[in-house]
Length: 461
Image (cartoon, rainbow, N blue to C red; front, side):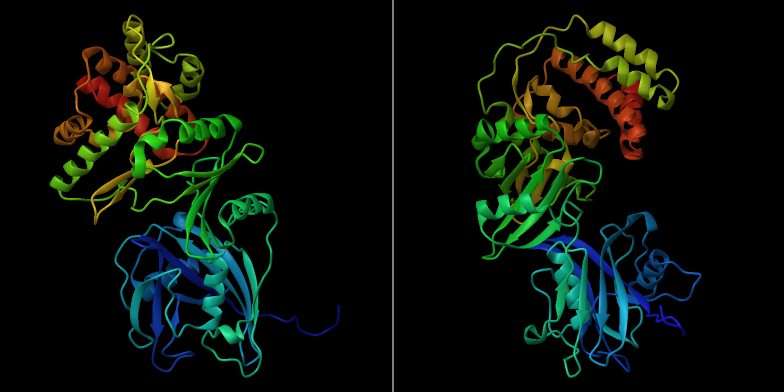
């Protein structure tokens, strides 16, 4: 080391506020204006740390509120990438880019003296002119990278120009978030051709990993690596047996590799209806379609006699022991009584079931009113009502939605099926509470407690 002052560089933060658009993922950009660097060019909402008292996450939340008006909970902030940048003038800095998908408020221009426009743009349709530094970060993010060096040369334009693209991605360690490891990427490209962009689309609470793969010729696929062999085999078996009977209402299996536990599937349009707010008539229309697709799943292969007992009780006691501390008073006694009364239920017919049939695994395309179903890693044959257990929370308190669902399904449940549905909901609630408590997933715990309370109060779902 040489003597003298240490070399230091500024640290700035960049907000990748992301939403799902009709044509794919979109990000919020603002256009710089006034007496500022790169006036007239598009850039992510960004800023500097205010001082040593402020960390990068707090700085991001503050800058987002000041520039766009949106309120972000620090728990919703996800690290995306870092860029070591040097501008044409020779000064360097380090930018930390964060992704946020959940926020409060509607973004708009809050600092008109330095910004004169704000809009959403597709990741594959970024506007011009754009600050080259920002574009380097978004190109790295779009391709699944975690870091890039972007050292511009004297005389380079401030705006992005493909002829002066100085971005130099720094490869991440194999298997790190952002894109799959080399073997999975190679498997994918053998199946679909060269992939130019990777986007992590994994569900936060699951052990499996999912990426969106954008092809060099415009195609879009999804790549999943399952968390265990059982889930991989279930999903592949479903795709190769009953899923084709759904036609265009489900993705198509493109390739599978048992050694990697990986699959490549086609993409389907639309967004998950989970958490959306719709007029009542649109909600009923959606639930009618959900009933229709449930019927299509259950009729995709002939029903056969049930293989054994109606209730899957193998792990009941273990789940109960793990959930007990989180149950409301009386929940355990209620569950034991209901299970005892249900012991005499006849074994129902076995049909193909999705196994995790809930709103998050559905995609609704508003413009065409088309419903799609995804994610078959929990698929197996079983009683048809199995697919309504996790969905039941979505119609709670809304008999009109339940009626629309049954109308789409084409029939009502028999008394035995209604009893079996209630018991399976108890079992699912207890296992969900146990899993949620063990894996710091409060939503699972709350949903399980809510279902138990509803059953105890009303006697039905």
